[in-house]
Structures are given as C-alpha cells and as structure tokens.
Length: 271
Image (cartoon, rainbow, N blue to C red):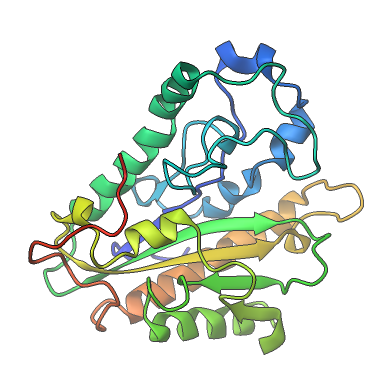
C-alpha cells in the first residue's frame, strides 16, 4: 500500500452525479445521461487517497459547475454535451442561488479550508490535483492531459515529473501524455493556482495546482461505456502512486505559488 504524503490534496470537481431530490422533477435527463454529464468515475480513482486528503462536491455539475467561476455563463447549462435539453422549465435566479449554496459554495469552502489549514512543515509545499476524465470518443486527444493554466498554476518541474511518471507507470509514449493540450485547467486550477488570490490570504504554504484529464479508455469499454471495475481499481492504485511520488519529490522544492505574505488586489474573486 502506497504511503500518501500529507502535502497532497486531491479534488474531483466533477466526481458526483447526484442531484437534490427537490429538483429531479424538473430534469429531463435520465440516470445514465446524468452520469455521462459528470466525471463520476473520478471519485473512485481516489479510492486509495485518505479521506481527509480528498474532496468532491455534494452534487453534480448540473446544479452549478464547481469548475466554473461563479459569474460564468455556463455555470448552469441548458444542454448536456450531446445536445440533450436538461430542464423542463428554466431555473429561476432564486433556485440557482439555492442550488449553489447546497454544493458549489460548500465545495469551495472545503478546498479553501484544506489549503489554509494544511498541517505540513513551514518550508514545505502543497500539491493540489483536480482529477477529471473524458470520453474515448474524443479520438484526437491523448491518454492523459496535465494542465497548469499554461504555466501559471504549477511549476514546470511538477508538470515534467507528472508527465514522466504517467509515461513510466502506464508504459505510454510522450505523445500520449501531453501538457496544456486542449485542456488548460478550469476555474479550480486558475483560482487556487492564482498567486494573487486575496481569498487565500491565510494560506501558510506554497502550492502547486494542476488539473489532470484522463481518457476513459483506461477503464471503460468504448462501445458499451461500462466501467471495468478491475481496470478502474488498478488505475486508482497507480494514480495514487504517481501523485504521492510527485508530491513527496516536490515537498521542499520551490513551489509556483508562494504563501500569501502581503496585501494584493485579487485577480479572481469567489463570492
């Protein structure tokens, strides 16, 4: 069993497909469509991570995408990725605010709490990883995409370490593990990887923040879209080994995002 270092925080921003009971009658999508509108398998990819080192939202992105800024136009979508309409009736402003208070806001509050109260040494750095996956039908995409918002959220050393670890652990070619290719890192990566984030002024540790996108071919049948539980478990174990090794290797290395030490104007605001 891999020993997971205490400077690792893992996230599954799209790792839930659940919805609040009171809203289900207004949803057109069936259970399978709801699952496909999420990255529901990513929570299982974190099975070997200790409970206090992983976070996911209570509900799925259908009720407020946690990987979008609070004022983003697509924080509530009207269609899924196949063009299916989501809602019988449009959501009111009041309903949207209530839904955000149930999942989006508590999720981000939990991440902030983890960052600000990390119990590691004063000269040690955090590695924060947001895990996503994507359908195998996106044939133009590689097997793994590691993103740091084009160099703004994590050091190049961390990016290179992760890339090499995936190549070696899964016997992949360099062309199958890309950096900032197609996916650059969503709001979570941008927001928590922002060195001038005033909302994290209490953060005591340097940090690197990355988003990892995984091709579902690793653990899902592309024809039936059924998950191979054995392959999923094997991937989860290897992923834990990769993240643990990279977090430990960069524990004392200069991190991309320094601990907040002076007053600055925020470049991203979470309200």
